[in-house]
Length: 237
Image (tube, rainbow, N blue to C red; front, side, top):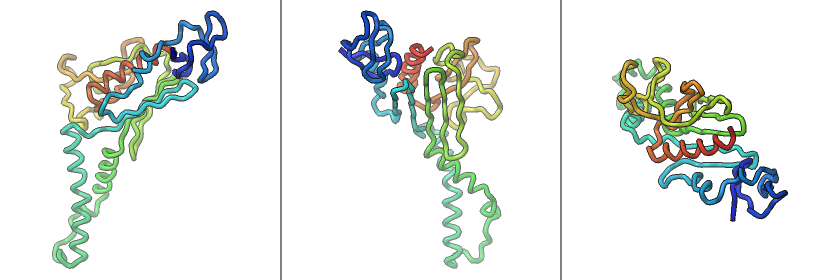
């Protein structure tokens, strides 16, 4: 029977013992107590990505696990932003083509097309197309990175300061910290928790929320992610 090593989260053979109560992993060659190994396939099933998901899971011999997922663009608000962001640069290019071909010679170039605003929309379009979230969990840290064309955002948290990973009601931290770009409606700051969307979150020992993650993932992906991260977290904390 195969077992899952608590050090590298890799598979090892049950019969490779270094002592009566110890087991040496054939993947990372480290020795751990036998009762700390998880039976396969239960643990390995946690690493299986839900069907239809764009999520990817990578593991290395050091025990570091990296989970990434692309933003899907499935929410109405996101699709609207994407459509609006594409109209201005496309209109700008078409206008220049028609003007330089003598079709719109009598029409002046709109002032907005001289401004850097259309460049901002181009960056927004690229961000919407390439944005992905990456969660890395190691021996002593959890890193949540939102990778975009510009700008990217990375937050790192110490494992010992994390209490749990679970659903929490969404409360904006700042005026600019909103879910409107995900197409999720959020009540005012005085609204009750029952009226708010629940999102996966990393929570500290004082029940404070460090950060939300995978806001745009499907319910199945979010439940799978919370279960996987909690399993890995409990084995490293």
